[in-house]
Image 1 (cartoon, rainbow, N blue to C red):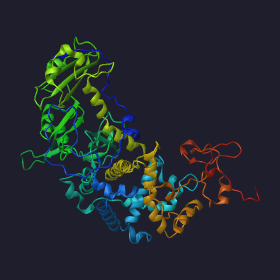
Image 2 (tube, rainbow, N blue to C red):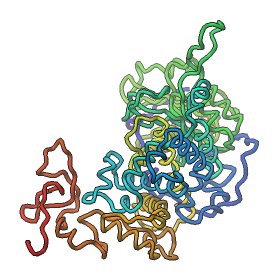
Image 3 (cartoon, rainbow, N blue to C red):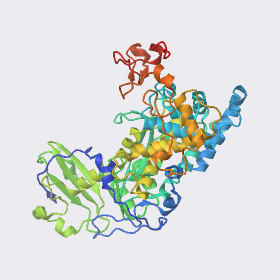
Image 4 (tube, rainbow, N blue to C red):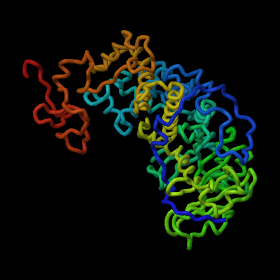
Length: 584
């Protein structure tokens, strides 16, 4: 049963980041008509790797609705989601009497205002300013002109304060049975599977959205994650594109009755939680496809349940599983880089287990229900050179290990690309944290659909996603800029508003950069209508980076683009004296 071969070390956490984010790995083709997932097909033992029953990529339904970048985002941030947010936000403003204290509120928040607010959040993430104070983004010297041109700072603060996703009056009654803002989440999450067909490999893993607030009833502590504290979600995504196909928020242990009518229900641990999560996230997924997961989910029972749906399983296994043979768990006396294989049978539902020793007294176990070419040939350990379970590489690693490394990082890559341009803002309100994560995942999924439906878009550009998010943010804020009544005080922002009112957006392609308003930062602006006196008061810097003022105390943390014309030190507007042209 055992086969020992030499190879190089392998780490359980080893995977190539570029394998998931590079645009060069994608082959874009026209998609056929979308079919709803029906009865799963059985995996035959002659199939080497799973082939999806429907072509991978955006569904015809999604392709028919995508006209520009904003419409791609609208596939996920739908009118029903907007209607719910607007209804609850305006209800909160009415309940707190905000309109009576602030005459500018008037009709409350509308669709244009909400989309502009979301657009500003996205732009803040594009400019890597999620940890920056909002006052700095609206600053006349170091801020960005498109923020001031869209709405005043006090309006942005008001929207952030009043933003709600449920009725506060009935919240206590609903959270007695469900802790989550369920209506918002369900309206958003239910659309994810109908817009994209995953490829032959699907990854199931956990995601942790950072949250330090203590008022969330299901906040989790995960020491192996960078944020450590946050809201945990289960995610099933395409292993290649990292499209989030299904998501489920973990709301903590379920409260089970104690049997005593007078005693309150107590939270109890759930048995076989990993198998339950994988089965729910892959529900509706037709085979043949492979599901890759880590040792929290993998079990022999899960593999058999997935085979009944026509799906195969591949994942690492914890050594305390009762179904594991002791010979594969033990490492004593086994040489380094050796491998041992075990099989449950030669049928279509057979399970394969491989034990690989990357270093002395340490092994990793991988279990799979992927079929092999011929079990009769692979059981001959003497023919290790022609064994189909081993790669032809010089290190002779098992193919299962290479397959696992190439497909396990779908959710990890999703976390990485989202964190790069995340729209998250500092808040202690956990529903807002979930809302920010919804925006991040929606923006990335929209990017995947837009890229695969428009393969010629920005061909050869390695910075596509940043440009996509920037154009998306500008497209969302443009309608509010055009209808704005008052003019911003800053000249560059006022010039931006005037340009759009005159018709600067024109009839050009909505996805082209030239059709969007161009934000500028004071001191580095090339806008033709920039204030000349403003340039004298705040000279154009000779540096392109924004740094801390070298005159103010460090604890003030005043950022600026302006440098002294004499000594080239960075100076903020509070440390400079303006002069008129005559006095200079």
